[in-house]
Image 1 (cartoon, rainbow over the protein chains, first blue to last red):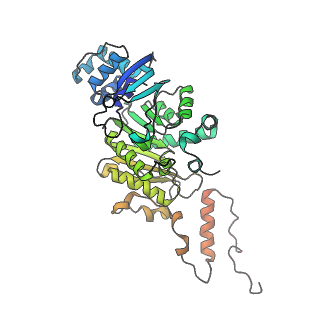
Image 2: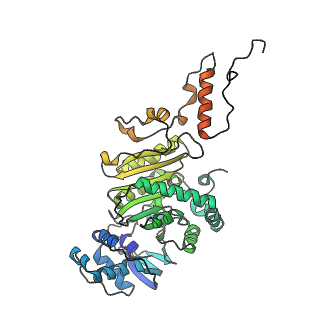
Image 3: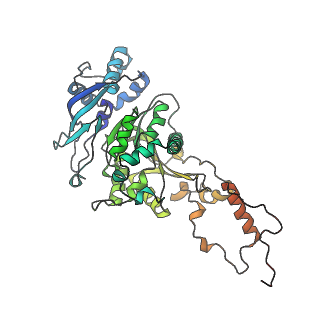
Length: 122
Length: 290
């Protein structure tokens, strides 16, 4: 699972009001090369929750992202490269996502997060 | 073969063996690719070459996602069958995969997805596979969460195989209740084999830009009456005449007549069936001695 997906996921448990961002417990992180596409990043940038992305990147051991970002920084190639790497190339392979409110763990196996809820959580 | 929906729940029906069968059949791969290409076309994303973030609901082994990747888009796939997702991993699909149940809601942040497609999956929601399942609630949760996670003006295109007219109305009804505008596009409405239904939903209030796209292989004469682009709630819903109650069509003592037979033969020809030529003997009355 890439951090792009992590940035979009929120906890879906019944009664949880603020299920975002899910905390990452990383056991194994992979890097897979992806073609660099600045247009996609510019298009995606307004939709990304920056704080969550920085937190997630740190959780998987990538600290190159600045703590705050605004759209003016999108002109910098350096910034885009870092964003590209964090968003698309880092994969959480094994570990878990933890709901920030209830502490429920969603295990991640082979890069696939198991977001299935138990019957009492729907 | 009966429909997979009535055999077993999806996470059980698509076990390791079935998942492998599904993905090794070149016929299914071909059909899936065609369906997803058409779905992507119906999504009508702006043609500016910028990759979008799309959602593939019921992505299975990633056959439909492959079409999205080929068109340069990033996608997130959701499926309930672990075996199917394992096959997707083996095939090294480019999108991200997620194990989840669409009937539990999608669990995605509001307003971030640029479009959603789903190939032959939504009809599963109409089944109650567990005692805790209530199809209406599941449909509501699904469409509600989908509406929230789509960006404004984004589209969702679902290819569905509804079992009956009632099932289609049920699905469409819940989509409308969630706030979607749109309707059903039926490609090749006269053919039983090639007939494909797509739910084309737009996030946001109805407007000119949300008009349902034109279907393929549609005959002006036979569908125009259903699709008369007039007003009213059902304006975009194309209900094909084959679901009309047949009995109400005129049945007189004289029988159906030559014209009716010719019309029927023409319809069958259009479907590609082998039909005997029209001659002077076609639909001719027998002599009285019979």
